[in-house]
Amino acid sequence: MRPRRVRDRRADALVRTDDEHIELPEVADTEALGERLAVGLGPGDLVVLSGPLGAGKTAFVRGLARGLGVAGPVTSPTFVIAREHRPLPDGPGVPLVHVDAFRLGMAGVDVAAQLDDLDLDTDLADAVVAVEWGEGVAERLAARHLLVRLERRDDDVRVAAVRRVAGTSPPPG
Ligand SMILES: Nc1ncnc2c1ncn2[C@@H]1O[C@H](COP(=O)(O)OP(=O)(O)OP(=O)(O)O)[C@@H](O)[C@H]1O
Ligand SMILES: [Mg+2]
Image (cartoon, rainbow, N blue to C red; front, side):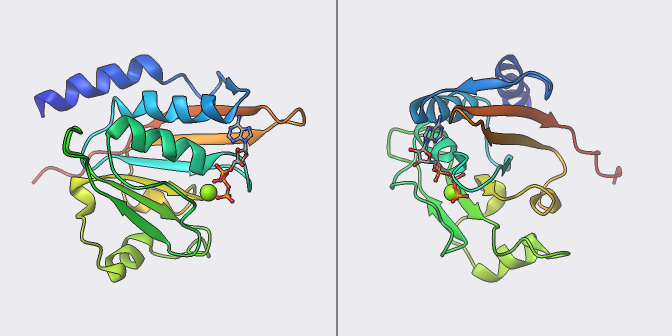
């Protein structure tokens, strides 16, 4: 619990309110934002990504993977639903589970049950879980999460709005 609070403070320093928008002119900027936000993330944390096709969700996760120090190329998992990335030997030891909810995003789908069915080797509680197309469906995994909304402006600059969504605490006992 104690290290957790330290991580949260560092993340809070990077997370703006939803009303402040972060301009990302180049794909490297989107990756860098993901890399920076990884600093505040640990096991069991959820990142929900929204934004249209080509907005840069996967680019953001690529940066997240770099920041977490996990292995394997990050590509759009559209056709595999979820991809697991293990920590590199010299990484901080937090695996990344990268989910694409595009096809799971049908009304009322239970993402937790769908992921359960995949029988991943990685326990979600031990990993950072990043879900593309996750808004409106992935919140079932964890009420408390980081919401990253990416938009593509007419001039092709991406604009990110990052919000820390506080979950309601589970009832005591
Ligand atoms: N500022 C930018 N940020 C992110 N991507 C950018 C930016 N400028 C250009 N691009 C390009 O836009 C594309 C973004 O693709 P990416 O796969 O990250 O989007 P996505 O939101 O995951 O799309 P999908 O909904 O298909 O999964 C890449 O080809 C990338 O090079
Ligand atoms: Mg993608």
